[in-house]
Length: 93
Image (cartoon, rainbow, N blue to C red; front, side, top):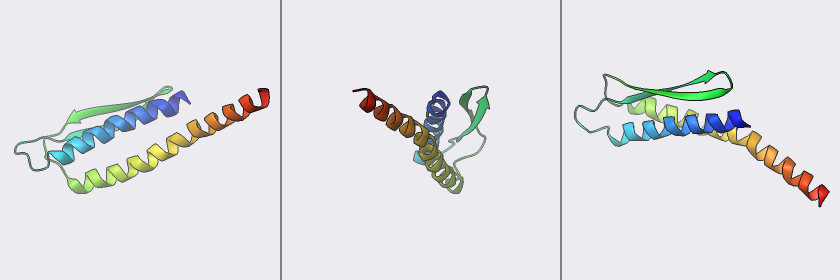
């Protein structure tokens, strides 16, 4: 479950960077932030770096759609564990 929580945090960082890129699409001389997510052992990490280019809206929108799906997928194990613990507590009570 900790891996899922770490992944949610990393994807949240990526989504924040993407939203910032979209918000600054018309800002002159704005360099977009590129974010990648990597597995480092039992931890999921978002790494961000400035690019030499402006914002590409097509890339940002497709990234946001993929992030939404991944976010939903990583919440399912947490919800399942919560339901299992609830059932266990109901049996004990």
